[in-house]
Length: 502
Image 1 (cartoon, rainbow, N blue to C red):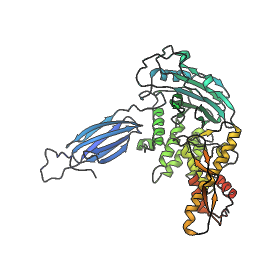
Image 2: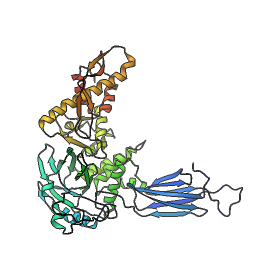
Image 3: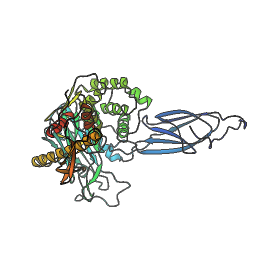
Image 4: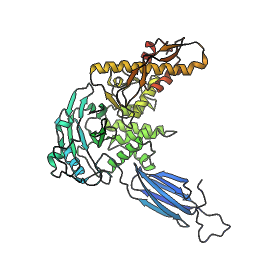
């Protein structure tokens, strides 16, 4: 309840009358903008998304509007007449060179429009993937960029098939601003459009910290647009490469990028809301979800945003899933993950990693009771233990060599076995006094890159002599370790545990 210390009574009110509430209507230029009304004691009085109609006692209030990470504030005084306030679209930061965003130049917008229509690599037909990487610096550069000092903003990028075959060296085949823009004071950009067969691909980035990858889905008759700003890598953080974690990915049935599209802006706000775990689903946007999508990524983002509600609207989610299946006409791992929440379909066999980290979490949850199965030998199984802790995308580290892969797998298995044993020991210690200490081979140390470990000769596993686990413990361990059921069962068997009967 709002404090009344800041209230200003209407001029017509007597001292014995309680102040009447006054209508305040706040509208915004973005349906995904968050609106907050705060009183003079900094107490939150009301909140909404896109539009807010609220009734408050007379007084001084602050209207706070948030779009992405951008915030605008304004004070209003409520007396006795209704007040309406409209907040224009805020300029938020985005890797997409959209009109009215904070990190966008007109020459970036024009380059993206022009180059998205060109074909730079022909590796198939029926779909395409457009990658636009750029740098952005605040203000104007004091010193023009020389050709020798210009770093290709697409440096280290490759497009691979799911089996690891390089489809296109994006860095090599990109058209860059150095080739087409004579103004060396401009922030550099690189663009590459790749014609591909419909399917699943890996976008790979080689950095001083390792090789990072994520899934890109190219449905038939759709064009995937990938936009990237730069990030600093290396021990001194001085080497720039594309920022996969901050990538924006869109789908369009039109190959040409449109920098002033309303839906593109909405897709970006939905992605940022999911990344920042903000509730940005307005009533208008929920109504839009009942219709077909110009960009299916909006439906996928919105589906995950709905699942953040304490009581998700599964009927609306079912409508979204149905609409997405209708417009895509192609299997999509993130759509399949959302469908798992409806508990209506057959067992899902997962071979391709989804694009979103939240989709992977849903798949792991569904593997507990067998509604989803991560298939052995698949790419989805191969990323186990290699994930990076970023949102919203599912990004993993690719080992440098086959030998490194084998060594990392051994280290990873040892680490998981240690965590497994410690968890079971903690859970069962009160139930039994029969315990044995075994010397664990590793002391795990998880880093941003591949799972690393250092050898240790200190006792690390405290295991029950009975060596049996219950179904409840299996479910708990899947969540604790973040691995699918088949992998956990292999660890348990290898450690000599007796598995529960299914």
